[in-house]
Length: 82
Image 1 (tube, rainbow, N blue to C red):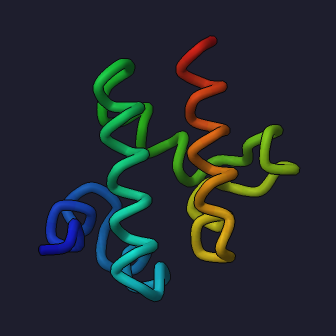
Image 2 (image 1 turned 60 degrees about the vertical axis):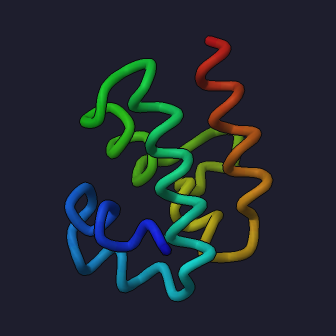
């Protein structure tokens, strides 16, 4: 079971289709849930698509799509730790 249906409700079909594998979608959904648990779903969605200084100003979604899911997870931990 993948996170695709839930992620589609959160980000919309265009962004979910842009994440080209179920693994990428699962990673994005997991990070969304981590952020949403602390700061809510709207902040989590903005965090996923926004520029992130811990990723060289890349967005977490783009980092995930480009095989840098571990980097995106580390950026989420940095964000959550404040």
